[in-house]
Length: 252
Image (cartoon, rainbow, N blue to C red; front, side, top):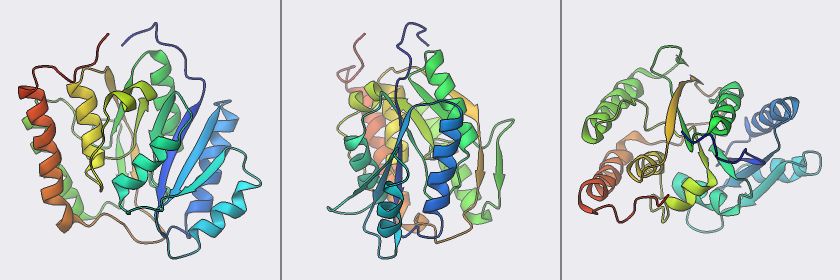
């Protein structure tokens, strides 16, 4: 932690969205209203990642009445990671949080992230599986696989952090720039970003957070497709940690 870091002037929230017509409006309203109540200057970068429903129409309709909303369309190849990277490339804030479009992440946790960044941390990671963390309606099979994957990552990197795969994290923009190039096109970006930030020497802390299963639309994570992708990116960053001789370490 570095208490001399500048305060956050603008918080960007990057939200990838694909076929989220059932939840995107309420998600944006909830986040923007609560951040406004807390006097947190913010922008919401919502990335429509090739939706075939009314997601983009809803976003363009909302834009006129929600000045903090900045919808963009990823016109290139689609995928969760590509959509998030596209949003990161369009953000203006000096800090960013990545949140889901299905309202599974709690805006009160986002506010806690923001406060921790302003205390002098460069990254804030949430965990649903430590004291104070909660999950609601978490699918059993997904839970078992999640715990196995996160235990593997913790052991591989020697981390006292047990929720690396969760997308909902916050970073100062300097961390995002320091972790480039980002190469994960899918949900493995949720692992690439925090592991690179840790390996490259950025300061971080963990908070208990809550997660609630979606009530509209379909989950985009296809577990059977992601195992090898998660393994690839873990080994990719592990090789950097032990064999790059610090070439990618941050420079004070």
